[in-house]
Length: 73
Image (cartoon, rainbow, N blue to C red; front, top):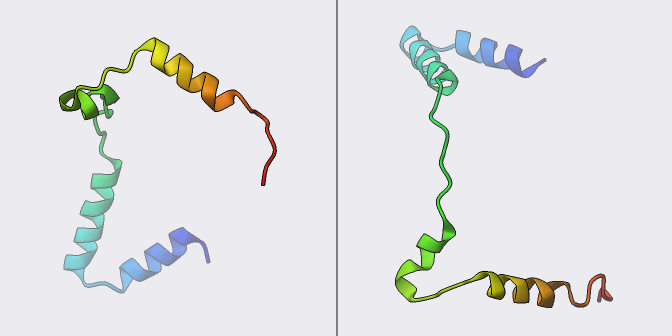
């Protein structure tokens, strides 16, 4: 039995009021939603006085990849 058939069968067993709730829920799933905007991660540490610049990122990348592919334990 497919997922659709299971949903249809289970919905048919419900009283009309609950069937209408299922329909409303399905409608809410298919409504267009505004796209989520990504915010800068800098806002997460803005009040901590942390300043991460391009040099810091370059250094972190260099440290991260220094031993690649390295030995695995």
